[in-house]
Image (cartoon, rainbow, N blue to C red; front, side):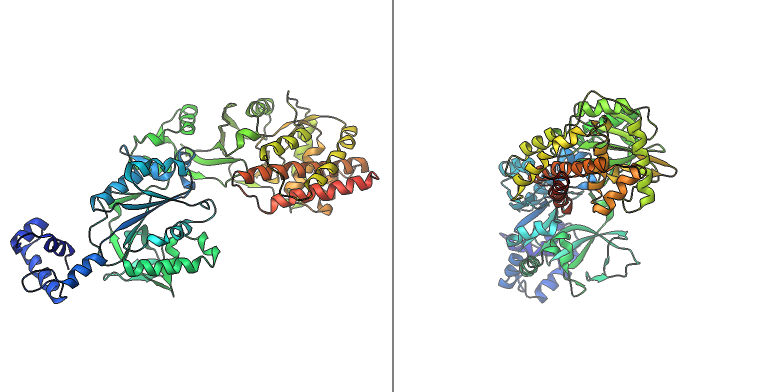
Length: 577
């Protein structure tokens, strides 16, 4: 049944011939005859080709009235672009993805548009004035997937399109009349889809061994299905874990896909999920030239085509980094994370890397900017982090740490532990979330004189001696990421390793004896305990500051505070205080 004929008949101001319908709609006269016969059969028109009440009701109930654009996500795979602009505002041929979608919606008369924003939400604000859209703010975009975004827009699902912000359609995918609800699939076969569209539009679930039709992300919901999905989202709100899924998960009910499937060709759209996909679609896009890409081009003497296989590395506590390949080599580009400028002196870091550049067991630094913290380094192949629960690996890490300390490398800056505690307190700016914080801090302060009295020497220390920063690669062990390094007592690195590994006292004692080759005296052991308490308070404050920026480190945060509380008591008991 041709919906466009029905629309044409509704808007006619005079009798329209079958021939004129064929010309206006660009279809054959025979198809016009067949479609008119079907419309009469369903009683949408009468024998004189006048549209009936049933036909008008059909058009009304299947006329898209609004659209919801999902644009809250971080877009992890878009590094390095997503450090400067959210995905929806990436430009293709001089036009942002989201503006193109809005203009396509306007073409078919849809002006009621809701955009769910989160990451860099302020960048979308101008759309309110330019297109009279409404913004819905998703404050949980970092944790939940887009099902939560759709939940926030659940009141606008009836007769609505649902649209991802990162899809570029060659032709306008929206129309004035939709005959039924649907979800859009592509003919492309992919292994991460469990659905396949059948000839009549049904969507069949397939086995995990099969490839399914690619899910595009666009859908239309009529009045009935919009209400049904709203009810499902309200139920999902009672089970918050569901919000960790993409919204398409809710379309599976009782192992069945609740919408019809609609297929488009794979060359009629592009989903922009990565730097390389943007480059392939528009090589001249202004967003391809980020500061970090310019660094890579200059250092490696290459261009955009020489930067391939970009992948986000695990989101670190301090930085965002991405992996890429150039020719046959692999590299890591570090981009400082949120709030990092407050935490780290990049000029001190630069001095440290200059001091250790001749060591064979640190990362190979090709570029380090002391002003913005951008760092380009060679990727360590076949790498794995130290497992703190495997004593054989820990022993090798302590041997390397002892070797480093004995090299007596010096720099002109010092890591002042107590000064840093006060600094992090100032950064968090509010009272600590821990009710007995003042009492615990007072105990930690009492340890200072004991620590300073028993420092035997100061050398360059790593400070951030996290097991994750000890990297095994074949027969080589590396110690990487020297952001916090400075002059200090070598025993501080032992304490740092222990609290990062979240060791209990038995494992801490084993670690101390491994470093000291079973020759650690009681005073030194108690001093390391004192460092554990003091460093625990340091990182506890660091975590509270980071939490004020929206970052959460889970059990690690509480563990650091427990070290401060419990080990300050141990040492003060030993000292008889």
